[in-house]
Image (cartoon, rainbow, N blue to C red; front, side):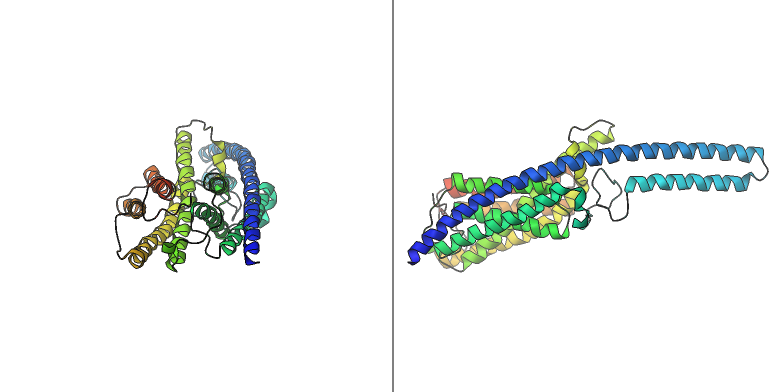
Length: 381
């Protein structure tokens, strides 16, 4: 009877995983649609602000000219000049208000160049009526995440263990964590602009799990039968989820930096969709904060793995391929943290370091697990 229930749950897990993948695909399309439409709206606002700014500057010049003439023609020119000067200042203030927008409005790179580095507006769904695609994308992602959680939990119950003992389970659980971290972060910070990349990466991970690493439900290997599996792997998955989001932000930072340089030179940029993305400095600062958290998690992963290795094999370190690459990942992110804090590696250099660190993470959990023999050969393939 118990075996039949496990088989049923295993089948349900596969079906719900497929439903989650299909929903994530719709989420990706909705986020892309929102970014395209919102960028177009911001482009129109940008043109309108430019016209208002040009008109305000023209009015200011005319008023200053009138003030100068009045001062030369009349003995009471001082008072008249002060009045005209005040009118000119009012015109300039109107131009600044038109440029910055209403107080509390969400700012993107197209809307404000004066916003403090690293600042984000809190997410406010009351303004989502102007961005229906974004509202739909977020709601559908919540639904996809719920389906995803059920699929992962059903897999764990069917296997009678935690569902991260092979590549299929790690990819599916890792994708779930990425989506969960993104949704939680979305509550506090408006990161809808990174939604296309996050949902796309989650979809890729699920496709890899289903197509490249299909693994039937099986019992746990003796070396993995330890409470350290829950501690070590769960923290590693959480760190990987954070690094996935910061990787997406690093890519956007590089694109946004290139666009900003072209605009500074007075050239047009073909990447108009980046109007809906904050400035490269803002992206870099927030990615650094998230990477700091991910680095702490990965440090704990490395330490917990050494303790588990001592219990399982009687030594803390044995230069196994998996151990080496886990340390390589830690070293790259440590270099990223050190270079940015103490050596002034800002801008594109920090973004490339973050991308290099994530590439090491991907290599560690795909190529190392599947192609390199060793004590950590738990791919299940």
